[in-house]
Amino acid sequence: MDENLNSHEELQPQPESDAAASGAATTKEAVPTKVTWDDSEMETTFANVVNVLSTREEFAVLFGTNQTWNVVGSKELSVKLANRIVLTPYAAKRLQALLAARIAEYEKQFGELKL
Image 1 (cartoon, one colour):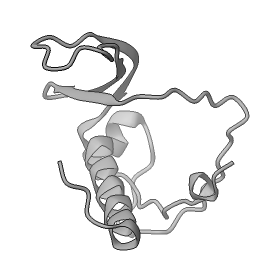
Image 2: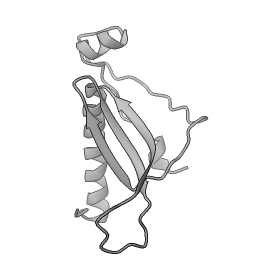
Image 3: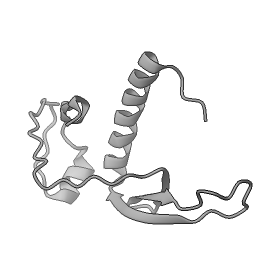
Image 4: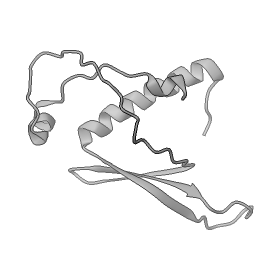
């Protein structure tokens, strides 16, 4: 298993409104939490296409694979969707911060990713 998959961030308590909605206890102090990652039932899926849909209450992240391999210059793409992850706005914001940090580390080591 890739050693980066086992790395973790210390999680801070959820903001009061998010914690209250999930039924979690709220605290006013940010206390680091030890996270144990259980990957015994984890599945791995490849995706080279991602899209995000959102409403006031949730963000849906759609993952898929471009099925249009041999058509150069085509005006249409066929994407087979494989997974949808639904997040609260707070979880989406935390995901954004984690991805930004990992991408910055990657670019520092391997060079800038140009889109």
